[in-house]
Length: 177
Image 1 (cartoon, one colour):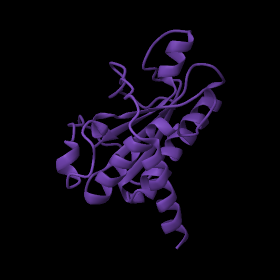
Image 2 (cartoon, rainbow, N blue to C red):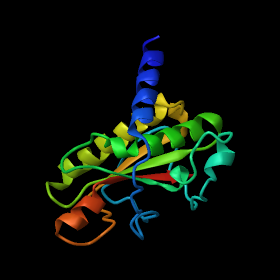
Image 3 (tube, rainbow, N blue to C red):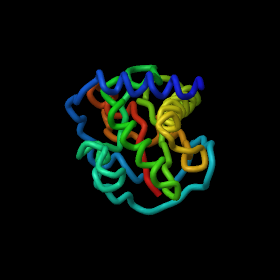
């Protein structure tokens, strides 16, 4: 009953959030090689293969607004693992897709900017990936469908030591397998 109440509350928040501007996915942000310094948890192993965009309307019976399934990155504030409201609709769409397609696997790759120690950033990336995992599971995804990995600061989307670069590196990437 409690899970049902939480789900209704999440759906109410999504309805109130409305459509926000979509964030651009930085070029080269997906598909890094190697696992040096990575921390993994969750079900499943490390799969490979490129994600093929999923048409939003077809995958979930037409209930997902177009474009939400094409968004594959969640960005975070400095030193935070809290999901910004801007990403609620996008994560709801992915969660609904996973709930409707039990054979689909998703790896959640957590990242941090270069500030802080390597160990701290691995932990922060893991907390971010777990936050996204929790939201997807509230939407109906199962634990068996989701795997988390943290790369910390090891795989930046953008090289640079300015706030714009930092903001693009504080992220979780959704990688379908």
